[in-house]
Length: 398
Image: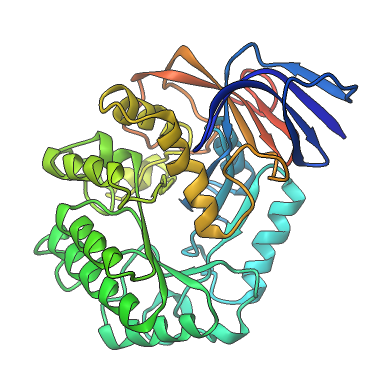
């Protein structure tokens, strides 16, 4: 299968050029001025083509909470936001704490065949932070383990988990929250556990990825330990760079303008590795009853473009690094740039078109951005060389 994309404005981590892209058998074969017979030719009309976005932190609620989201609707939501890969957290019902449930999710995602799905496994049985799973028996395809949804407050347990994960050369995604402090201060809860886990990463050698980092002191700790060559990476969310002093319930909480300013600074100095959505669908009833979280896949690029590019003069190259290249590197995948031999996961964006946030492909609509207008329309998403989404047409149910 050969697909030729003509007249592309290619932007990735390293390049900003006008060229054609030849795709064959799911891979990028060539870039340049290309005249070749193909099964399909699409004229991009000088719209922006970027590597497909990769979300390191997503909740698709399958199995057990399909009233909020499932693998199909979650994948549709991802495609509508330009995402070609999502890494799912394990706080499902039942919890992903064994290979049977892990493979159930992976097999179902392959059957649906819309985006690339990666699945985290819990570090303790039933996410109770009491008994560790048997890490050595975990499926070797697992990239990361995580207790996401809560922190590992017990320091001895955290040390033992880090040590066991390092032995099998995997990584852990940390939701930094000391629950002994949460009711006193969510800021203290995040900061204390971040500092501890940075230290444990340095001492155990365990690869640690910090999820949804939101405070000045947590970012400063990560920067400090990165400079000591601790094997750590971190992500920030679109809502933590855009919203301030809001009571919209998310975990960690929405912070202050000073925290946002620090995040922007840490993006510019490369302390922050990635933007991740923490896409967390909820029913209206759950939100009304205080559930934390928001959907984010379909608005992530728009917010990143507005805050980082329009307001802080950060290049689209850097945004591509944060949303594609670095996440691919963290997952160890041959994605994230537009080069020959790389996976043909691409997103086409009309950067001059204004959008108004109204409807979603997600089952849920718990978004504080409904009614807002942004620049940048996701027009098409290509996964493994196949067009999986076209705005207003293929797989767009908005």
